[in-house]
Image 1 (cartoon, helix red, strand yellow):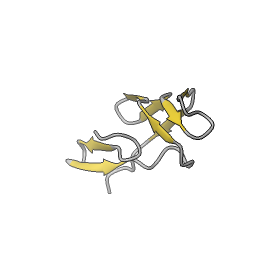
Image 2: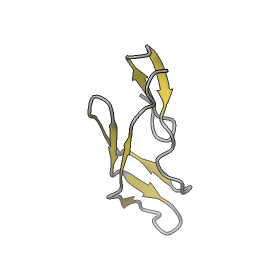
Image 3: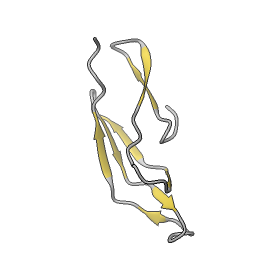
Image 4: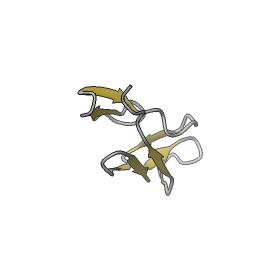
Length: 72
């Protein structure tokens, strides 16, 4: 696994790596979310971000669920 936004996950049904789409559309730098695997989905929660308004960082309460495409 890499760090968001370059997160890669290993899909054992394909025996290949899949790139997870960027969960946040803004350009703020975010890091250290908690990532949970639910056997098929990934849940991404929290983390922190830095931007001009939050130069010391801000803890986040965002959550995002991603389901990889089914093998074709």
